[in-house]
Length: 66
Image 1 (cartoon, helix red, strand yellow):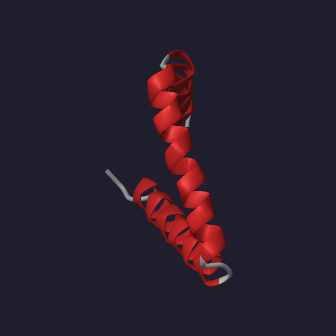
Image 2 (cartoon, one colour):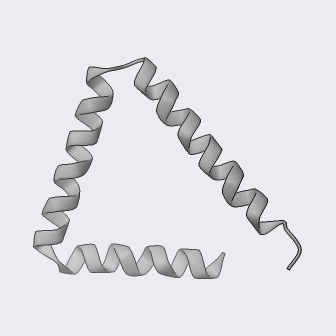
């Protein structure tokens, strides 16, 4: 958990420092939100399903014995 939080913090710090990268990431985020709005409500259902499946895969991998 600590590793995930620290990686997220480093990514946010890097985005805060690099203006060019931040502009690119924000442009992609705006385009993604516009695409979701264009194809809603089915796009929200698909997006939610993908996020749920990714979460289930992430959680199931952590509980396996090593």
